[in-house]
Length: 176
Image 1 (cartoon, one colour):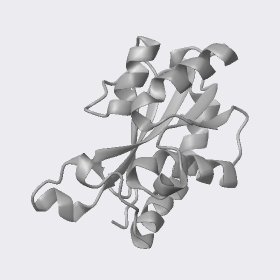
Image 2 (cartoon, rainbow, N blue to C red):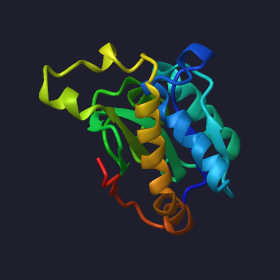
Image 3 (tube, rainbow, N blue to C red):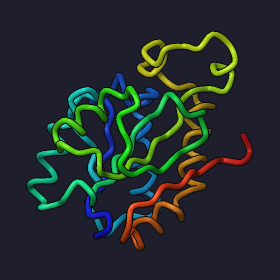
């Protein structure tokens, strides 16, 4: 079946451009810069929690099944500098993903979950996602996120070229 559509989700507007919540949009820009693609690479124009309408509309217009979609998004349960590829997984508390699942009426799609939680936030009082995901990333964190995505571009492109069956992999930036 293979991946036929890649969509990043986040929030529109300049004020959110460098926020942790827009890790998916940052990843999409890196993919466009580094490899381009033979499939559409789209950034949702909807706010994160209403991502389902954009994803559903694009899938219908392009005749793409849910199983052929890769969603790029932030994940506050993963450490900054890591990314995990999943298929057929629940929303895990992520409102944007929950909206996509509700709209598509299935969770059978690929997700690249991009870690945005600093390691120090795991060991101290656990911050709620709402306390930091809309904040602007310091340059150091943005570079760490970019390095993580760039170091895994080959694995992502491999998924695009050989994704005939659902699979999951964890991609880690070893230097963290």
